[in-house]
Image 1: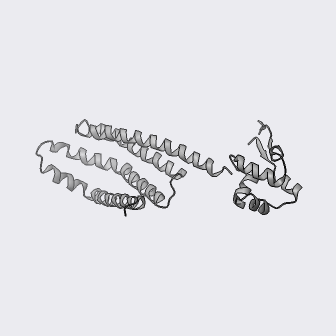
Image 2: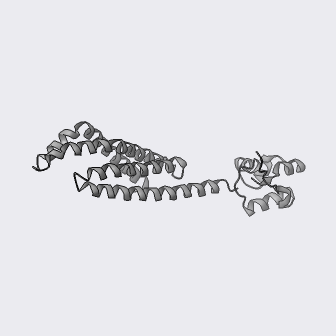
Image 3: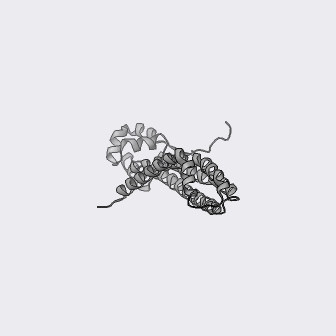
Length: 148
Length: 72
């Protein structure tokens, strides 16, 4: 029977698989992008920009994946409304925000990266609102716990 | 906080232990301890009613308002 616990485990497994793919890409990014470029023939001069953009986004991406895994582990332990989760959501939001200027700058060379920039800004805003909701819920939970 | 709980004073006056009161009003000793030490954020009317009933006192005997000092 499908339940929320299994759903959390599925999310955790999916995130770990994504983290593994990301780890492989860190070492193989130049070759991977070169392979991608073999299908296009144009704009080969901007190949290095794409690789640099990828590596510039690596630190926020690694932080994001770590934060998601920590958040899911907390949820699995039934620790939902705790201040650590609020902090993790805040970190996730800032990680998304930090990608915006990188992809925006790279957008001068690859127009499609502007879309990633806008999407990252939207996700960061949504996460910020979620973080505010989580903070309010944690506060209410704490007050409830201290009501005798 | 400006509201002070004088539960330990009332317990001493009635010569009753915390454990005994916790048992009589059906709350855990941990929760009674939170109440006694002033860590509680709120108290339910039902809990206050039970305490007053068992200790044979008024809510004012348990709760006291003291203005917070601004210095320090």
